[in-house]
Image (cartoon, rainbow, N blue to C red):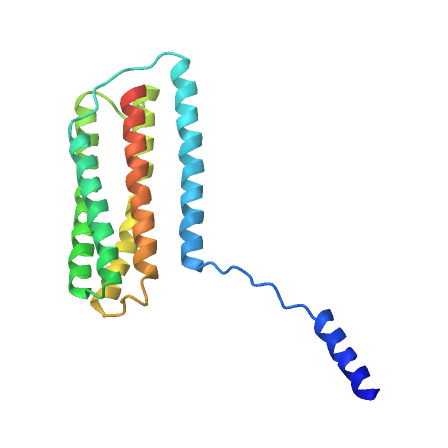
Length: 202
């Protein structure tokens, strides 16, 4: 009788205790970069909306976008490819290849920034300045904001290169490279969106 009662109590205790639900964990660096991306998307969505509203009001000067912006766009696309290859190299423990590809991506990012600056100089030769007609002001603001965020992306790239140089990145520790790749691909896509937008609605 006592054994039966004990078994019943054990069963009741087992039924009454519930296993704690598993909480889905997200890497904090991935969370930060996605929060960063969402913030930037909201920022540029508001800016492009303001652009369209102001353009509809009239007094809108049209100008030719310097050809160097086309070249810089191609440079950024190539850098996105090398960034993708960098991640693949990290997953395969190809550290030497990883360092080379990250260095190339960083160099291409710097070339892109330099070309954007030269593009601004070309605009000034056309008489388009930050202060003046709203069309030119918006162009400088869009490209300037993108350049600022790309500079942050370059900071992550440099950190990735330093970690690879110290042999602290391998197939079991690719978080930094993944975060770097995600942010860099996003900045590439963002620029393509802005460039097409400015071409179509200039």
